[in-house]
Length: 567
Image 1: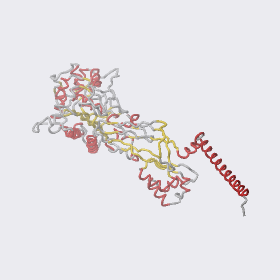
Image 2: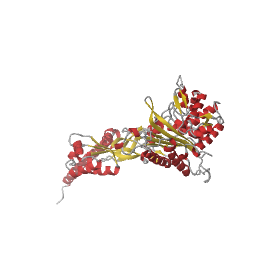
Image 3: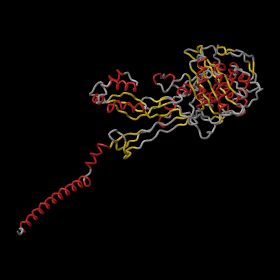
Image 4: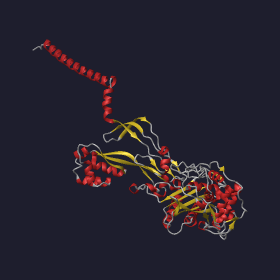
């Protein structure tokens, strides 16, 4: 049988038509898909990009840490440690079952150092979306907390200021307030320099808020500047230890000590007692946060006698050979007398035995204007160049229109004016430097600054010899140091109260060493010692001796006196 060719042809034609239609449909679909993809991905991709970015692109702020504060050798005095701030989303805590899990909640409360009842009260409302739980939490604890609370715990980056040296440097270094700004001391004085500024950035993040890729910086931030202080932590620590012991031993209200480099004007130690632990805010007492060495003023008493004597020598109101009657005498009906009685003496004797009557005669012969002028040259009556905020300028009474005779007399032995410990330390550094005054610096210097000559070098050299006799033979024997020549002056002044003076005292010792080539000046001030001793040589002299000895040893300063020489 012969096949029907026409029928077969028709079947093939029909099949080919169907395949053509299928391929046409496929081609049309592909063309549509390609066209659609071209439309949405090439020609108009903005919507998809926006949708994608809405899911992964996040803006965030990054704040660099606040600048370091270190001592002169780089030892850290203040550092910002990374921590987490902890907040909660009560709605999620309820939804994920954490709120009903007593064991988990107890552990969360333990990590946060909260009473469990307080924690439950904070997050009990399931409609709330935000509750603050803790300001600072260590990162290791934060990781455990995140596992316990899941999405109900919100962690954010932060910093906590830590002070490794604790109480010994706290009044000097200062602390931060709740807003992260410096209050007190160096933290406040150099707050703008130390403070960092946050940068605004855009990044791709995953669902756990981890950064996958940084895309761009919207606003550039700046890191906090680092400060290197002139302080030597070894001397700071020892000075604080000795001062604390002396304050306790003498039952004093407070004490301060300032040690300076004679060659550079740098402050090597500045301590105040009582102090506080800046790392434990629960026991913070603002009264102990003040740096008393720069904020508290006091009448310097006999420690100012060398400067008034130099003013009198410059004004030709006295000389080193004139003999004065040093017996008690009356001025404006008030008796001026000495605690160390002698009938007469030269200027050297007056300095050695701290004669108030002798200095009263000299001051009255000179007049107050010249004394005030020279005192101002030595830095009294104005703030030092340290840059520490809150520093007191003290008073010199230069605005007085009238000086009574008794005021002029008592000016000679340090009454009627007020100074800070830092000013007095600068003054004795100037005396040690043969009358060349250097600016005071709390920052480490790369080279010594230029000095200003404020007194005659020859007369200051004579005064140095007089100050050596104070320690070797006079009222400052407790400040003597084996194998070193020391120049210094004791000071004991009554504390002013309403209507006059009470029965409490300021006991001071100020001096420098070694006398042959002075390296350090140190002033120790003890306020209101109540344990029986109150003279400056007795309550402050031993602290001077010990701290100065440590400084001379640490800096390998050669002795300038033989062992068999008398103090």
